[in-house]
Image (cartoon, rainbow, N blue to C red):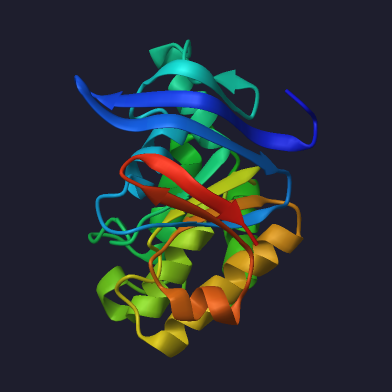
Length: 225
């Protein structure tokens, strides 16, 4: 893999069970690049993200992400790939029975962190990055929608990922809050992390311009600034 590229797809084909969902996908992402993945509902945006974190298998073509070959990756290696990725979901997927602090601790401990001091230092760092340094004690239901999404971004940042995959991260948020989330993701990109964000919000794309990769019926039909 070229050192400058975090993702290389060339004529990649992806199936869900026996159903063809993505065909002849060619897309290269460089380190620190920000790109929007756009297209109508059902165009394949979520399927492409799932292929990149190895939830859907890539059957044909070339599919490399962070040095892992998605065509041949073994089940035992998928957790190690995902530790190098940050995944941000539209519906937050926070654990509702524990505080934000405890949510973040859970992720770190489940990915091999053991020292209490280092765990706390990393949690403090990511809460500072999302501008929520004093909100760690809050339960998820006590956070606004925007704060919950920032918390999801904090969770995605914990293991210092090289790539962030964000699936409609502003889908449930108001315009002002959405702008704050996209601004934060652009800042993360400028700091050196590749960000691929699926969205259908053209207002945000116009406000924060970046490369646009357009999907239609499981194929990339445009890839431009």
